Length: 294
Image (tube, rainbow, N blue to C red; front, side, top):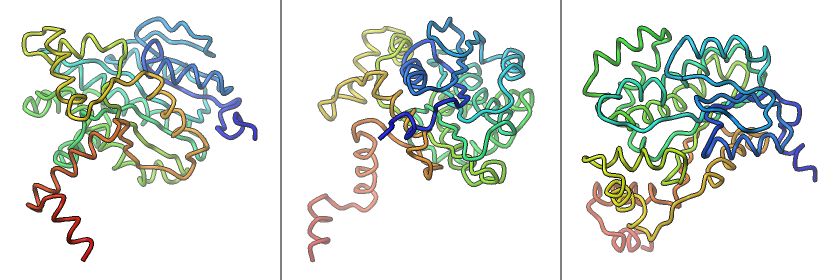
């Protein structure tokens, strides 16, 4: 079996963001290995043998537009992977980078996407519970003008106070709301997202500092471990453990999969969900097991 043919990237034009480091760098390396023509974008220099590298600040519309205008007329896959940590005072920038720039790029590239193209996104377990704010996420998802969207954010300070969380909830809502929309389904364009658990990346230090109320990196690291690792004797993932599955869902291997939010967290969020269900039903695991055996 020809594995490159199975993935379906040979000679295809692929756009990917965040390629300078972390999960996206791992994904970019694999895409190159699989024969794709990779057009990579990052705010930092990209030191990979891609077809073309762009250095751009994706919080700025004018820099995004400049890149969009230079990308190929035909695109076969998009991977949006860029993001930043949330610190007090950068709530709007987090929305710009972690959600709206991704929506903006995808929406504007849709006319260039080939039939049966794929859109694959890196979100986060931080977006868990997106259903609770879906209506609010839809409000900003349905705004197609950059400046109008920025005004909407400024008018909703309470929502963007949880900056990282709300941006990721918007990403996940975007996947669910768009998978069967006319602009996607008319050309059978697939859209999916992975939601990584705790992973070592170039942003790990920033995430640790942003988690601590004092901005203390060590304290933040311990807090993250308590939330994401200690409850299940967990370990931190590598960038490859996220970047490689991302490539798979954007490949021909998953050609019939769309609208999916895939949690890559060793089952952590499934335990959160099962715990919530048990609490709602006021039944123990033993009681549910007993009921199923009657």
